[in-house]
Each structure stands twice: as C-alpha cells, then as structure tokens.
Length: 510
Image 1 (cartoon, one colour):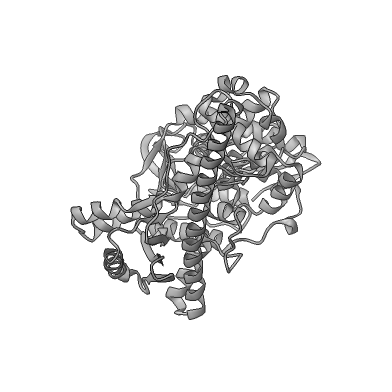
Image 2: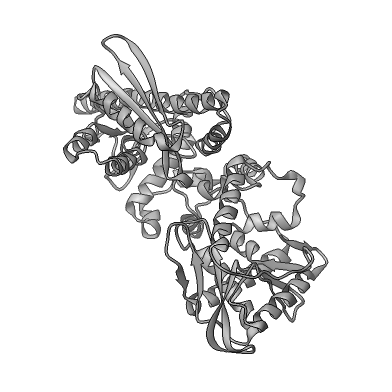
C-alpha cells in the first residue's frame, strides 16, 4: 500500500488508502512506511470479517450494474492508468477499479483507485462526456476521511480528463448515495496531502496518542500502547480527546500529574467548566489510584468535600441483569442474556436466549418477554443505552403492544449512567471491562471480546460447533455478572460516601 525510502522523494507513493489512514492517525501511516511489518499485531478476526464484508458489499454493487475493469499486470500502476485512460476515451459507462496516477514535479507519485468512474454529460479531453468518481464504503456516515479520499480521486481525475468533475459520490451502507462537495473538500484534501508528505519526509516518529475507538483495531496498537503506558501518557485518561489535548498543551498541562494539580479556572476558558471539572477529577483519581465521588458543582473539587449526589440505585428481592450479543451486518440480536438474582432463595440463574438461526430472533424475543413477565417488579440492570434501544427495535419489529413495552422500559436501569453520574475511577475507559476489572471481576475467557463474538456467531452459523457456542454463552453470562458485580460495588461505594460525608459534616459542626 505504501512505499517510501529514506533516500528521498522519488520513492514516495501517496495512495488513497494512505490518506484515509493519515486522516485518522498520522502515527499509523509513519509506522506503516518506516517500521518493520513483523512488529505488527496479528490481524484480528473482526478486522478480517470487516474486510470480507466490505468486499462482499462492493461486489454486490458491481454485480448489480454493467461495468468494465482495466486489465493490467498486478501492481503495474502505469499500465493500469493507461488501461483506465483507454476505457475513458472509449466512453465506457462505468469503470470499476480504475487507476488514476500522477507524478508531481517533486517526483512524488499520487495514486487513487476509486471503486467506480461513472460517465456523465460534460466537456473534457474525451469529448462531450466526463467522469466522476464513486467510492463504496461499509460505513454508515460520510466520514471526513471518506470525503478526503473522494476529493483526492476527483483531483487526479481532473488531470486525466482536463476538468474537475462536478461532484464525487460515496455509496454507504443502507444509505442513499452521498454527494461530496469538491469545492469544500479539494482544498482540505490538498492540505492533508501536503501535511502527509511533510510528515513522511521529516522521518520523525509522531507522538503517540491513544484514542480507544480509532486505535483498537490498528495493527500497531500494542506497540503504541506500550509506549503510552511507559510514559503514563495523558491520552490514557478518559475524556482527553485529541482536540482537548491540544488545548491542554497550549496551557502547559501535558502530564496526568500536572492535570491533577490544575485549577478549574485555568482550564475552563479552553474546555468549559464541566469538562474541566471532569478532567481534573479523573486525573486526581488516577494519580491517587482510588475511586472518588464525582462532583458536578463548585469551582474546585477541593471546595466541595461532601457527597451531594441524589443518585440512588434500586434494590429488590429479585434483580435481573441483561446483556445482548448482536451481529450488526445481519441487523440481528442473536443472544438475549438474562441473569436472575433471587435473594429470597439465594439463587443465581442465567438464561441464554439464543437464536440458533437468524430467523429465531422473533422466538427469543417472545422468550425474553415471557421470562421478564415473571418478575414485573424486578429492576432490569444493563450497561449503556444499547439494550434499551434494542428493546425498542425488537418491540417495534415484532409488534409488541405499546403498554407492554412501556411497562418493560420502566424496569430498566442503566448502571453505566449511574457510574458516570456518581463516581470517578482510575481507569483508562468507562467500558464495562475496564470498570469491572478494576474492582476485581475477571471474564473466564480473557481474550474474547464482543467483536470477536460477532465472528464466532458467524462461525456457529457455518459449523454448528458447540464449543464455539459455549464461548459466546460464557462471554455473555460474564457480561451480565460483571454488571451485577459493578452494581453491587457502586451501591456500597455510594453508601460509604454518604456515611463519610455525614461524619465529616458532623465533625466540622462540633
């Protein structure tokens, strides 16, 4: 994908894939170019599945329309560009996987391979027609990096046909085609290209920055995370985004310790009062390695010593803990896991409502409704908004009466929301795994993730291998138990905080 040598510009190849990744992370592109590929992490199963899904989605669109592809030896971009040019000169209606190539005066090679080049009316070198690029992406939103890549293709296409197309298009998953404003994105793309070339020529490894969502699937994650951990890099703090990090740097706050000692008045002009309060409390929690009460009022955390939260978690003689496993590509929720904690009988029972086939989703939904109807007064604890949104989706899809849905939703309690409103913990993320592990809970299959379960479910559909199913069920049960464990910890933490605040107040009042 990327080639570069320390000898200079003549070996540099700037591709649309490189620009896409550069827009996401400059460090990744630098490491792709200059580091030993053997040091990369093994490719994750979920990433391989995303690639396969992306290829299948692209292929389905190709199959639905007539098109021609340029023929050329693999990797011979010059030959590919010439073959693409001939197809455009012939006026082919749609060209798939065309090659657009340009050499800059400095000797840098620019290469784009749009999924489609679509013939349109207009005036160009070819005659009374021209072409516009289309990129097919598995994502649901027209992300900036997608639009940068589309503008890059349009820019190179202008070189070949003598005119910039009126637009470029993105075909996204379950969305209408999206038109990219080239007037806006071509100048931005040119800035990114220039910045990318400068970064690569400088040959100085960009600073590490851990952004959890963007970094988790990267093949350099282990290397970058090890560096960040050894440096105790401030990006490991929840809430420190790249833009906030730039704001903190401008204020001279570049370490967790300096952030923990910062005043709200120093940070507030840059990030606002609420964010400043959260960041300082988070840094203090990490430095002290202890959970602290999350304060929402007062200018400084030090001036608000008493527990003032009115948040309380419900408790009951029977409590339900709920977690879902889903396959997004199939728009399917294939496992509804319910852990029933019955304090009356001192029992814990896990019910894995599993769709052996995608068509079984309606069945497990009815099973879920039957199960929870046995406990109409039991709170249903879950972690994050996903479970509630899924319940609404399934109820609508399978025509559950609205009064029944409303009664069900009234039982739901989001443990994540309570954590975020009451406690600051010394963690790198407020995900269930980070929180539960900090308070001592461990999953039985340490290496399994929710993303991996998506792959395992697809494997189950192909093989019906019981051992695969057992891994999924254990993972889901452990998610339910982690939520149970976290809820109990949070109840005790809140009670202790109230007692300590009351004692402190009584002592001061004496």
